[in-house]
Amino acid sequence: MKSKIVGLALAGSLAIPAFSAQFITIGTGGVTGVYYPTGGAICRMVNKLRKTAHIRCSVESTGGSVYNVNTIKAGELDFGISQSDTAYQAYHGIGKFKGKPIKELRSVMAIYPELLTLVVRKDSGIKKLTDIKGKRINIDTPGSGTRMTTEIVMHAVGLKDSDLALADEMKSSEAPSLLKDNKIDGYFAVFGHPTANIKDAANSVAIDLIPIKGPAIQKLFKKYPYYAPGVISGAFYKGVNHDTPSIGVKAVLVTSTKIPEKVVYTVTKAILDNFAAFKKLHPAYKTITKKSLLDGLSIPQHPGAIKAFKEAGLLK
Image 1: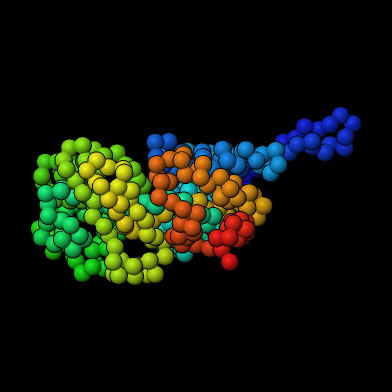
Image 2: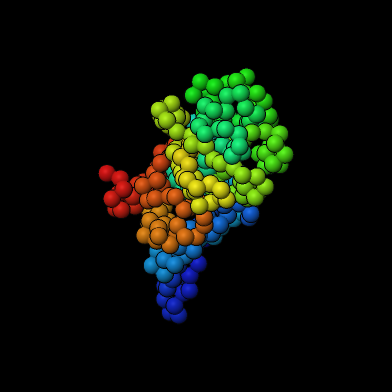
């Protein structure tokens, strides 16, 4: 664990510090994404307790999920933010971590959803998920997280790529222009909301967001433990006057078994005790609840986090 003890020794004392602080670091992502301000918000709440908890928190901009879990394993980060599917793969030694499981990785809480989103032209005639049959849909690039989740969802409702009039494979960043130019009827993408991508689309053409829900979707939460339900607020995008349920991964705060229970407990409790204020810090937190912080935890939870959630009456 990367930590330092600092203190001010009283004159004539036996070198016992009058005040000592344990330093912890949270790995996030790029400074323009949602992970970085999320880490900053957590640290600000923890640092308000530094006089009593004796913990000082700092945030570090990193390469994101995979970097964070690997660096926690190396002991160079104490906490990190990761997509729930990345955490699952890391813990079980599959996917990007094949043969190299990180069994000491632990979840703290699932903060906000990164949801599969189906954006369509309002004049496309698409009102529900199965209406994409025979339509021109961008399903993202092969190997992307969006593509993987899109194909899982399509398969769940009995659809395959060949059922589409066009299964375009462009990056989601290019999809708003394709939609505007009427080259596609809709596109799938995974986002934390709100996102400039959909705002750009909504400012260029009348759009709608299509619910991704139903019994077939519900079964996916049991089959894939890193998926969780979520809702895209209707207030986020021009022309969309309804909330939209969907499925996605969660941005999860993770740590290691090497981090003491007291430290993890303090971080968790700081968020739970200041949850109303926390929700106001970023639009991506608009639809989260204290209960939803436990949805989508795809790996075992740290004992310190469990203790805080139990005290809050959220776990038995």
